[in-house]
Image (tube, rainbow, N blue to C red; front, side, top):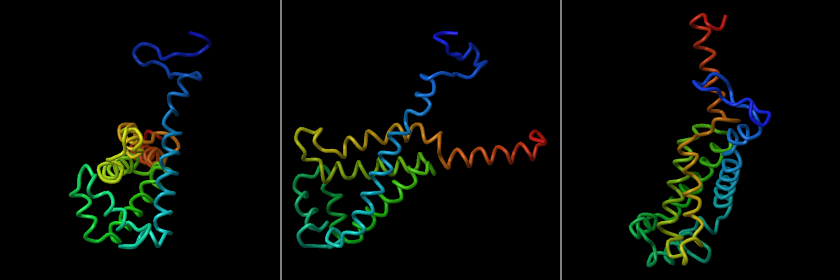
Length: 179
């Protein structure tokens, strides 16, 4: 025992307990909640803003694309979106909404996080590329924030974990182990 905690024994013979181990286990939950809420809100905000989803005019995605074209790190992405700004706007908004909800639920967590990272990467290479200094562009920070969730997934308080436990129980019962 060290400091009143039961540490994992050599060879993996015991669970880790204590405040430090608990904090490590749940360390990604605040990040998951923040990204999930933020992307859900961003998607809903875009879907409920008819001005944003317009192809042209003040406050529209079309106008935004026109304004950032000359400073984008990947102008070909702007060109793709400019073919149909309204369709692209809906795709972006629905993508953000789905990524946000899946992240909050912990459903297909790694896939959702990869989707969030991809959205953030595209936004960084287009809309916030010209931010100077670079750390003023929040899309790069979002991209980096998604990476731990891509790597680790959502182990706790997640639909993925519930489905995994359900499958395991079903397998145990089928093998006679859980009887």
